[in-house]
Image (cartoon, rainbow, N blue to C red):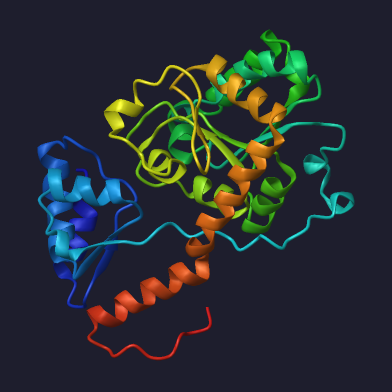
Length: 314
């Protein structure tokens, strides 16, 4: 039964516990709410990466807001890193391609990558050398249920749309160094997720950490991070075309035309693109793994009632 293992574990713990929720769903089932309340109730502190995650916990699960701490997802420190294009492995050699669109992480249907493939047909009309780089292996749960069905669907779609040569797959796990290289050689990071409820995205955090222009659908984490003063999520869901924010661009769900429009606009407006990249790096300055690690460490000390010592080298 869902949650039985984690509930059994936390009920037997005799040590102080801090729990991080990477996902918090609104309107939970009775079982999900019970499991979440049990785990959160046993914790000395609860961590979420976003304000919306905290709001969901306090609203739908009645978790005491005084025990909820918002610590952003960590990101790499890469502002000074330069990638030697001549030393890249073959699958990352992208000379001759421009612009380069990237999506990395575990592949599954909810990532909406078919809309990125469809957008290529429109971008290719003005930029025939455009490349969509899809890096990462298929999600284990997806492999168990459907194997590589989704990846094969994307490959067939690219062939059908006439952009087979403009899509490249890297079907394996990438370590952090390889992920950073992928980001540093790319022009845009695209996140065409099909659902709005995701409160935390590590790939979004990494893209911002590398100073990339992010073009995303309006899931919760993206709305909160990419817009300077995000309106209510219900208002965002009404958008019908690209919405250019301070740190990135939002496009409607399942809308390849809006995605292509955003890419083409940014290709024509270099000042806008550079401004977004600058703001992305500025935001990510406070979300580096070093700073995020220090915030976790301070919280752990508070939980243990240990007086904060000098900063630790992480």
